[in-house]
Image 1 (spheres, one colour):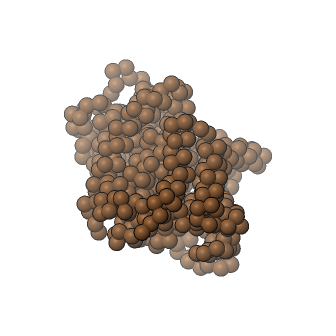
Image 2: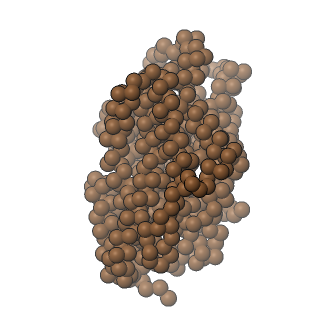
Length: 509
């Protein structure tokens, strides 16, 4: 029999985050700091966790988040900022939006395929901000451009930034990453196929306008789903979203070249965009895409030479010495952050960036992400306190008792709430990954399938998270549109979560 009072107390930090970030609009760093304080007090007074062990939990959370999450995000954004400053991003944009004059195809190429690619290699809002700006420059209405990119930035999020979300989910739930990734891919497969069709509907506001691009839209979604699944299973989760996005892009390009769209869809007041692909030489194209080609090369080499995944490249240290405490491990050579950083150095040199400008860009990038890093460190520390103290287990027991066999219905909803609160799929997985696992154990459900439900459902919350909407609003320079974006995104998010919940509940593998 569980202690109901203690179980309810365990929900206090999570409820506080929901209210403070979603309702009271308190700054994320402040809200998360208060959540850590609340969790510490509850762990000490209600769960008899010593102050020493609370401190060790916080230190472990801070170190783990900086090495395994923040380092990757920092390096990914650095690569992006270099391509922005050197003009390489302009070349990439011109190559992409010259493929077809059809507005529906343009939205799929920029928001779905290229946006998914940006999410896979950079994250941190680039998948919303950059595609939105490109679409607006191409003549899309600002609000529509932002909504299309927000909705598109869902399925690719599960394996974003070189697989950090899924790797983190596996870490906190203590499950094997490959099998967990496979389960997430299966849950997202159908949604990936349908997503391009939904984007076409958002662009046109008419279901009938899907005619003429139904086949290519479906094939692009199918290509994404197959590319992501096969890569996650046989190559590695780091490349899964990259492979999916590039597969979708190749299908869109090939289709438009072999089967040009017969009835071109344009807006009533259209503007012609100067995007002559013939002006771009093969060398310019390779140099522009160089950082991402290097990432692919480095990861393939890492997979080909498994010796680099072993000592002496692994740093290990134990911070928490209470019950269930163990060492954390970090491979400084094969980390996604290290791969991206090496790519950034080579890219800066090849693309003509001076050494001084490179260091200035590094400083600017660090300045750009410092507030987000504070939030991430606090969220991970919160999760460590709740896990080690037993608060997660108590929460899981309460949820298992109240939901019973219907828990799979709400598993994706929990993940979506986590992303809505934190603005991050990774943070949602940190907060609720172990809760999902422990609930699955208590209900005798497949741990991998239920924990995967958190990772899959977390992708839905991305389209309505205040952080994503704020980035989208900034990209269209019209913050007054935030409420309208939330209104648009909410209906799609609700449908997404309900459908995902039914899928997780009805389908078992």
